[in-house]
Length: 208
Image (cartoon, rainbow, N blue to C red; front, side, top):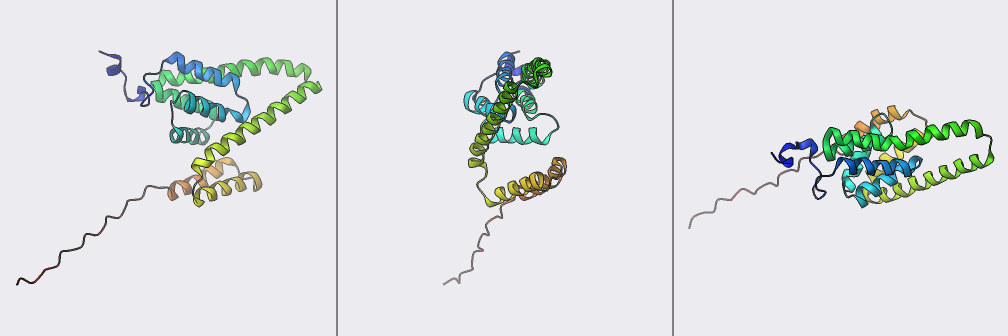
């Protein structure tokens, strides 16, 4: 039996990508995990998965990102699992998860030990401030890139503004925002059946 016959729907690669290897999934997320910082990881994910690898298109990336943000845990880790599963099923999800978390886990361990003994060093404080500023800049850049394509209607902007106000100014828990704004957004964007066009009834014409 051929490999194509053995692979089920869960292991099917997206159209145009061919069958992605487990090693490639692992290495891709390993690089992302090793080179991304803070909130900027979304920019790295989009650049790698959409622009470079073309494993996802813009809409698929937004769907995966939305699911990742709605689920518990880190967005980047959730994305790695979702994309890995989409490409190669359970094994791909495991490869994506390990690749994404391995460099960060090791780096945090080393930096945690180093920071514990040097946290009063002004150079360390300045370096962390610089990394934080870069992360904010990357996140702002990816927000603008995605927003130009996704926020095209007044309803989209209204939901964004409501969410920002509730989380940032009213300080409502993100869990409650998801449980309230989420269902409202789903209801507003639900698929609607198009009304069939009325077919005019033929009129009886008098026979000459």
